[in-house]
Length: 111
Image (cartoon, rainbow, N blue to C red; front, side, top):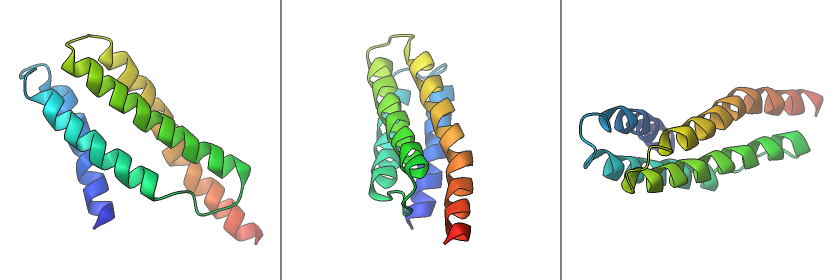
């Protein structure tokens, strides 16, 4: 159930960013809900391993969630900087999403 909500909220984050161009009054509310769900699921699923690099990558995911929350706030204030903050969060999240499973697999093979 968590993984389904996680994926749906990720897709809703992307759709609300696109929706902002056409409906700027509705998109921040969809973004706020989806970022809240996405962040809650991310925080409640910590890194299961013991490596420092894996924990650093998990902290990078938390930072990206905080950046998405800041971008949502800027979206509510009709500031155009929300795009830059959201892109920065997306880059950190994308990097950690690719590297974290590799690090966990490397740690599991070493044990």
